[in-house]
Image (cartoon, rainbow, N blue to C red):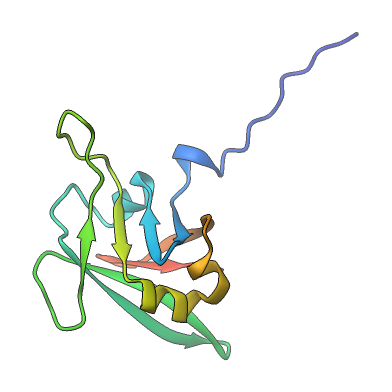
Amino acid sequence: MEWEVFKLDQTGGRTAPFVSIGRGQLDFNAVACELVGDYGEYKFAQILTGKERGKTVVAVKFLREYEENSITIKRKVQQNGKSIQGMTVRNKDAIERLFGKDGSNKGMVRHKVEPIGENILKIID
């Protein structure tokens, strides 16, 4: 028998920027946070919507200071008190209205993200 090295998916896990959507929240991984230069200074987020080829597209703008219609960003903390890289934007009503079944799902559904501004990530369907 001849053995071959199994090729790993380079688009998943810790190498690809993504957001997990479900349970009324958006969880951005550390790689996604790096795209907007987040090192813990963003405190709020605004959800943006627009139309692209007749379809609603969602993006998230990250803010250091509160602006109208902002949502407080939550950060996970380890037992030693150190913050885990990544950001959570939690607003059950808004997430369920925007993402339907995916937004209210008890599990999480991953979507790729891409930067469209200095502090804005677009969620790719």
